[in-house]
Image (tube, rainbow, N blue to C red; front, top):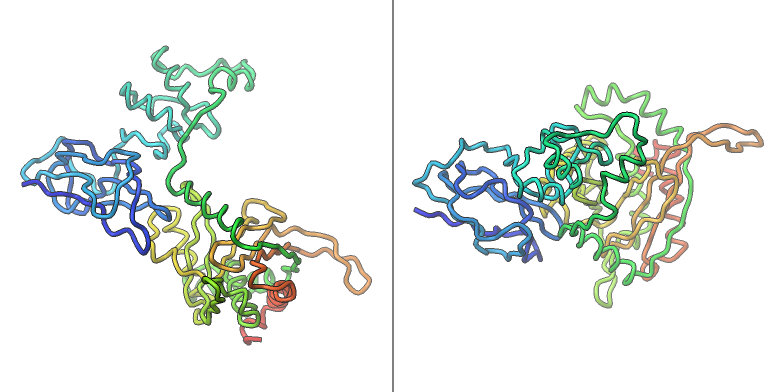
Length: 399
C-alpha cells in the first residue's frame, strides 16, 4: 500500500516552503518517524518524517521546488523493504545539497562541487579541499576526476598560485529561501521604519566581578553557566518598563504597547541569522533566562527551531561582540521598535575623579523606530541599561 507524505502545517502565516534536500533516494528503506527530507520556510528549516516504514517509492517534489501546505512530497511503499537498512538519524551521505555536512577531509562542500560529485558518482571523502578552511570546490572535484587522486599542489608552490589555479574566479550559488527572506525583511525594515541609532558605553567591571565571584556556585546550583546575556536581558526588561515605547510597535495607524517582555536573542547559524525568543523575561530568574538561551541556541545551531520559538518577540538583542565587533548599528527586527547592539569588551583608559584607570568597556547601541520612540526615550533607555550593568544589584532589587 502506498502511503503519501504531504507538506505539514508550517506555522502561522507561512503558506509555502522550498524543498531543501532529500535524505533518501527512491528505493531506500525508511523507518517510521525517520527524517526523509528538509523543507526551508521563510523562518526556519524543518524536517519531514516518514509516517510509515517501508521503502521510498516515489519523490514528487524535487530539491529546490516550492511547495504549499498539504502538497504531495513523496510516497512510501509499506510492502517493500528497500535497498539499505534504515538509519533514523543519519541523512544519506550522497545527497547532493548546497549545505551538505563536512566530509572527512576536514572542510565543507560548495554547491557546485556537490552537484558535480553527485553527477559523476565521486566519493567526496577521498578529496582534500583547497578552499578556505578545507572547503571542497568544483575545481577540486574536477581535478580528482582528471588525475584519479586528490592531487594536492606541490608544497613549494606559492599559496596564491594554488588559489589562482584551483579556485574559479566566480561561483554563483542561489540564495536559500531563509537567506532571501532575511534579505527582504531587513530591507523592508529600512524602507518602512524611521530608523535611527544612539550609542553609549558601559563599564563591565561590576558584572565581570559578580560573575567571577558566583559563577561556580551558580553553575553548581542551577546546572547552567552564568553568562553575560542574562544580565543584558534583565537590564533591558528594567529599561523597557520605564520606556514602554521601545517595547511597542506600529500597527496600521496605532501604536501597540506591550506589557510583557519577549526578548529575541539573535543567533548566527550556518543557514543564516535567526532570532529565537525568550518569553516572559519579566517572570524569569537569571538561571531560567540562561537555561532558555542555551536551549534555544542549541536548537538554532541544529536547525531545530520551531515557528513558535521564533515568533512574538517584542524587543531584540544582537551580540556582534562575539565576532569581535567594536561598534555597529543593528537593523530593526520588524515590527519591533528597538534592538540593542552588544559589542566586544575592550580594556580602555578611562578618567575617574581626575585619575586615569583601565576599565573593561563595551560600546552599546540602540537602533529604534523614530515614529514611535523619541530621542529622549532612546537615550534614557540606554542610560538605564548602562546603570543596571554598572550596578547589577539594581537588577536583583528591581530598581
